[in-house]
Picture 1 (cartoon, rainbow, N blue to C red):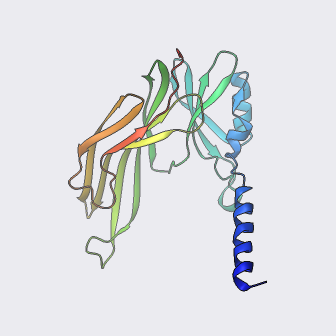
Picture 2: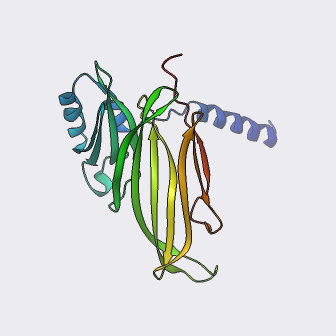
Picture 3: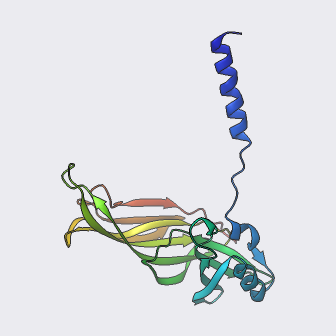
Length: 217
């Protein structure tokens, strides 16, 4: 058997193994996806950490979950925000946001109707600190502030997110910046704004497909 044939067979075997890889949902999603009562939701979440209701909407509740453990013992993929929607016979996990940091703050939560489908918008403010290079040679400490809009259908735990504001401050002055306006139409979310100074850190204008099903069809 030639070396080329051996290499080709190894490549095919590797692809076959990759095809069998199963991507697991986060622990809380697997365990607490849909439950018959609110008490059951709280009991399930408490098994994974400390839950706290931080926003209440007409048919939904937004929970912040602080996962159990610290360091290597921390339950990965559990810290964050969980949106539960009252579906009548069950409370269903209708959205998540896992990228919370100690400097995150929920600024608001509201219902959003798209194609007769009632979904949800969660606005989040975040601050991050890290070094940046403005001149391409030296690094300087920077502070990045962003405002995110997380859009959830209420039918699945996965959401999409858009950045509506961004500032990267170096020595207290805005090095890069973006201000946008979020609009939703034709099952798409668009952020438009002045993108002339977004630099390499701020995202600028965005367009996201929502894919929310029309319940009347």
